[in-house]
Length: 83
Image 1 (cartoon, rainbow, N blue to C red):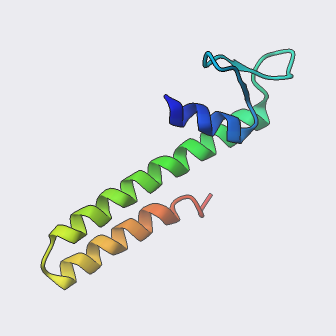
Image 2: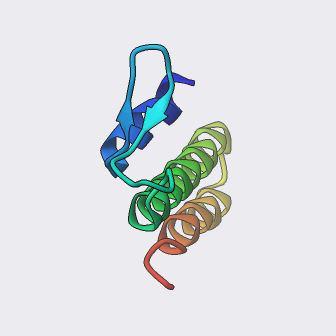
């Protein structure tokens, strides 16, 4: 939950200490903030997935298999660059 609140703050939401999220918008969440938040969450998820690849690669002895796993991690991270 702390990670989500950190991302919400980074996206521009005003998060109270109790975890409630406030914005200046009359209608609640602003579209720009929500889009930024979704982008941050997706980036964090891609980073976590790539990290799993790196951990698995560390357990693999075959350098060719390691390289394939590194390529998978690179492809996961690159998904955020294509839109």
